[in-house]
Amino acid sequence: MSGFPHPTDVQVGQRLRQRRTMLGLSQERLGELLGVSYQQIQKYERGVNRIGSSRLHALSRILEVPVAYFFEDGMPAASIPSLPAGLEEGAAAFLFDAALAQSADAVAAEGREMQELVRAFRRIGDPQVRRRLLELARALAAAFDRDGAHGTADP
View 1 (tube, helix red, strand yellow):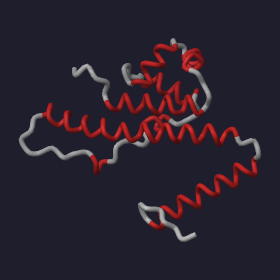
View 2: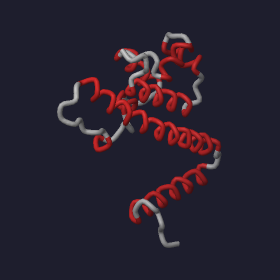
View 3: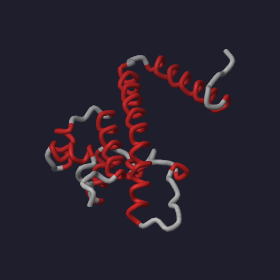
View 4: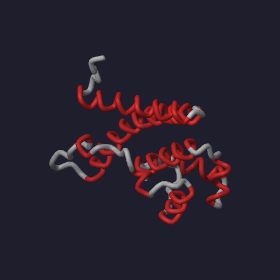
């Protein structure tokens, strides 16, 4: 046992925190709905405590997302280093954990930006303005897809 949270538990916790904050739920309120303390929610969100399958199912119902939501945006298979021949199992876990830790930092930064964007979007009261903003975001994403990583669409 390494003493560090498993990267999957950290990812599930990050997705839990992301969805909870998107819905405007406090850790205390989520704990009440789930039947646990807010301290337990904190431990889940940090990945310190693993979330059992029945509790994960309950969280998915409370947060109105499929269970798969907690596992989305994981590290792409191409970024998992392959194991050189002759290395023992412990070394493979180390390589895998190091790659996941690097990708977890990028996911966390992106998650904070997404939460900010969602909070700002929800404060827009005019449905027409919200719809136009969504159209703009879709157009920018399409230009990015069309023009590649630089997103340099012609104005």
